[in-house]
Image (tube, rainbow, N blue to C red; front, side):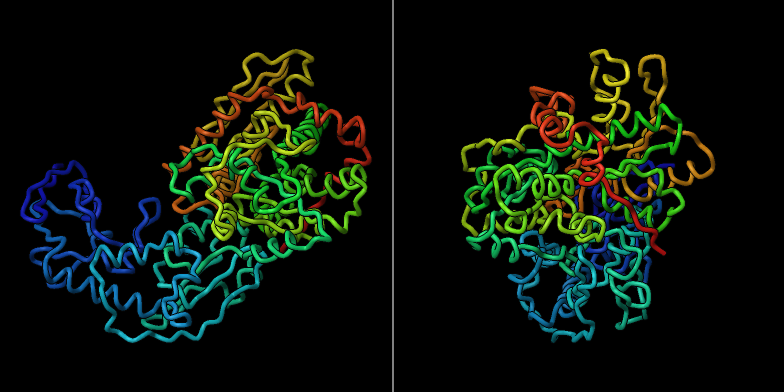
Amino acid sequence: MTYCVKINDREYKFDEEISILQAAAQAHIKIPTLCYNEKLAPYGSCRLCSVEVEGRKTLMPACVTKIENGMIVKTHSEKVRRVRRTIMELIIASHDISCNLNCLNCSRSSSCEIRQVAQEIGIHSIRIPPIEKKQSVDSSSHAIVREPSKCIVCNRCVRKCAEVQNINVLTVANRGPKTIITTFMDRGMGNVDCTNCGQCILECPSGALHEAYHLDYVWKAIENSDKMVIVQTAPAVRVAIAEEFGFKPGTIATGQLVAGLRLLGFDKVFDTNFTADLTIMEEGTEFIKRFKAQKKLPLFTSCSPGWIKFIEHNYPEMLENLSTCKSPQQMFGAVIKSFYAQKIGVDKSKIVVVSLMPCTAKKFEAQRNEMKGDVDYVLTTRELAKMFLQAGIKLMDLSAEEYDSPFGESSGAAELFGSSGGVMEAALRTAYEIITGHKLENIDFHEVRGLKGIKEACVKIGTQEVKVAVAHGLGNARILMERIKKGEKFDFVEFMACPGGCIGGGGQPIPTNEEVIVERMTAVYDIDTLAKHRKSHENESVKRLYKEFFGEPLSERSHELLHTSYTVRH
């Protein structure tokens, strides 16, 4: 059926029944909204998208109103503009009375949707007095802080948690002017089944949700002359940090990142990719051992702390399927505070390990009792950008520098950890050569790449077939876990909590949408393609570490320092 719709006195034809908001967008007309996201179910809570529809007594929310054949719509009439200004003033009045709209204190100060929409609508003054809220700040979580005074009840965080991640820890409570967003029985983010993935932060337009900041702790450590402060950089950070300085998504800034960190005052700048290669040596060997014995299969990867907490809450009966390997972040801290401390003759109590991560869940992981002490502080990509700004460092103007030795060497396979399917591909490259004893010529496993929610492949290694799967986003993880519970057979499965993997992590620059993720993903594969070595077992520095310290993968010492256990959570 063809729908003929008149929008602002001009006729348009549409081949399907879509919302007025979508129809206007196709007609190149932008209708303002704060509660809408095309990847989430429309909700119609903010009402900023209200439009006039001939024959309707009231203004209609464009995001939830479907077009009809012969419909006549006015998107920016005098009445619509007047009502939108009033609605926007009410939203602003309900937004953070505690700091009187002090944008300097807000986590979204550089990416504020409220300010952007207010400018589009034409808000020049606020006639409505601030609306007082009595909810206190929720800092119960190691990873995520809620500031209810800034919440505009757009419901986007609730829908992202429910529809994409399928966790459902956020909910709407009360009605009318008393409506709030909260957790179950208002227990706080740290006391519910939150996985700390931070996808709610990426969705929040008002700064009511943000990471638990470690910035001040890191500055104090750097300024403490008695401490040696060592920093590690995750692969997903180098393809995203430039966005905070106005560059396009996917801009590779590895060398500038290293140079900037030295200017900040870090004593050593190392690469998490080094321990990503180390992880593959341990996890790949672990997989080979299980696969040959056909025990505890499928093996689940253990690099994503959001996924780890998800399985602890939801599938504790399958914890034995998890790899016992620590994540690259935690392995790095363990190596620094053992092997490296001994090598340079510095007591580990004098060493502070800081991680630069795309992930809010890494903050929680660093505080887990099973691994506490490996890593001291975790900064998200957004926090790091603030640190550069505070120091007056124009990151992208810096000349590229190299990582420090010995933990600056890595393979292209390690870089793949930043993208969904990357851990699987890196592991397969190494597992193939260890199992067969032959060189793998075609090392690109395209079957596990891309943004499809669940990817499956049968990989032939010698005479054997290995059935693998990759899931990114916890909603997809739940679907795949249910299939496995029902008896579907896999040998090796990679899970990542965030859509797209680490490049779509909750600590990344905002916006982090599908288009941005694709650009970052492309950059990750570009780095891998250009790498001197593209397999983890080719990393000479990792080989030396085994020779000098660990002996071999899964040795007694590696089990002590590089492996961990998990917690059943009810």
